[in-house]
Length: 342
Ligand code: F6P
Image: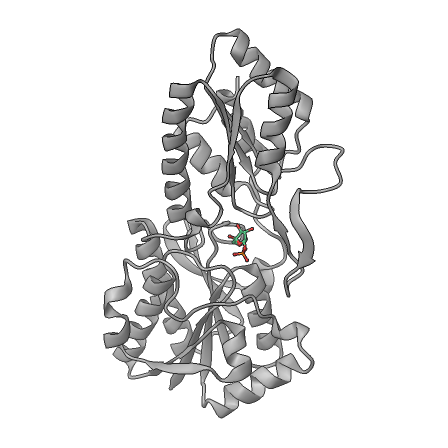
């Protein structure tokens, strides 16, 4: 058997751990592994490398992806699916393991519906893939963001400033909420709960009146202002999956607070810093289990599915089910968090 493996979409810490486990499990069964470079772009161009355990052995602690990645969408290319199917055959692949978020996995689903043997592994720092408790990279991103927010607490306290930290996560507030809570932020704003500017300035005013002069506000990059036309974006261009580049809400909010209340503010945007770095033990271990389970699905002839984590167990989910909706922060979870926003 000859198995292809690719990583698509934004990189995430833990991808190399998953690739490593795929290669190791394949070697156990005597399967050959072909790494497809640059995600789906590599399937369109037949940009591949042979992988042996020697190539991946020492990568479990490395962030990013040794296979490189891209946001190329074959569904947006003329005859993209036909081209990938043709290359799949020409490369002599028996199956393909696609490691990615909802974008990459939506291509995997389309290919599977077109008859290709594909298995998915969920990855994204955003943690917004349904039917799984966690995606590769999320835990590391939360820990990295938590440390950044904690560092900002020190400087906010010393200078008695309001600091607004903008955290990645696209249309889901998972990283902002979890890292903000873990770092003891004073207020966390997420896309799932649109907010009014006035409520934020009133909040800061109340805190200042109580004698608190250093205030830490975490805002998810996709957070929505009620009655505003949508999230704040860098520009209007979209990628091949139709996503705009989010960003700017932190600056916007810091300026509003400064103008309204005359207090000193700073806006910090760690952006891609939360996507890099060495994966946490949790991400390394989960990615390793995902890699093993994905190869076992190939061995058992189960395709059109992805591996997932549920209550500590690795389970199998149809791609169609996992992609039917995105996973967002629930009102209950946000309500719980609000305990700390008084
Ligand atoms: O999906 C992961 C993610 O990091 C999002 O949180 C963010 O909005 C986006 O990717 C950034 O994309 P890019 O790396 O293309 O700028």
